[in-house]
Length: 334
Ligand code: TYM
Image (tube, rainbow, N blue to C red; front, side, top):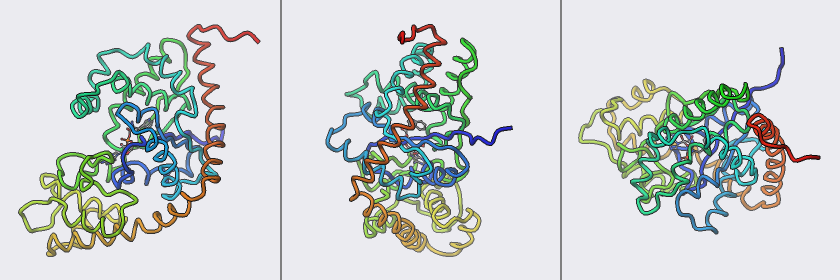
């Protein structure tokens, strides 16, 4: 028996502004699980290149995301936080995995179909092979557990298939990674269009609450959230706007849907919105003040990135060497 902790890995694309959807689906669970696992948290800048980026903004956003991870409660002393491009092995393993991935299975990826529609003037090959790079992120560290929101389930299934395929073609190399998808908050919906998911890169900023939104902005966005023409407060998925606000309330107050519905029984939508606004502002306040402190300290942030890259590269290099050997590439003679 060994006491070695299992490996947890997850990541977020530095695009747009980190939002309450990313928090509910991913970050909150990272914080809760970080003690139990040997954890690696990525800022996946190479993934972000699949849509057009302004270079200076992308650069700043990576540091801002790092500071937000820490401000949300990720402990950089106990975990590895790393920018994807600092570990070139991700892209190298992705190439190998590309050669065992079929065109057909990537064509079935719903996120590829959605993003191709959204960015019809930039359907680049990177957008198509994006899930293979994600599989590489996971497999390069031999991850056992991957906490994500519901929208990443299909990508994770591909990572599992590729791990199994590689193991079968060569020999046991990768653990089959397990998804961790929270029961509540796995799919937070847009505030203005509650039939679609909340997205941090939505063009309409009123569709999401950014973790760094000012209090008056949060209150205004929630007040304007689209609900329906009913008046009673019940949890009904056919009323997605209301269901979404109730879900957000349960996440931010750490209660159940039944408790939340009980709390708002007989009250009006306007009361739910104003209480949710207050709760959200209070919830984000400590995180925001911590962020404002950390983001000033570039020396501290750079040090985390240096240590993170070094730890991550060591692990990634070991996996990649093993993979290269198994598939028949000639090692560089010493
Ligand atoms: P990304 O950057 O779109 O989203 C980051 C995380 O937030 C979750 N999420 C949501 N959860 C609940 N409700 C929402 N409305 C919502 N929107 C986003 C996502 O499910 C995700 O967990 N491909 C990934 C990033 C990635 C990755 C990885 C994740 C790259 N490599 C390896 C895990 C492991 C992505 O684009 O997530």
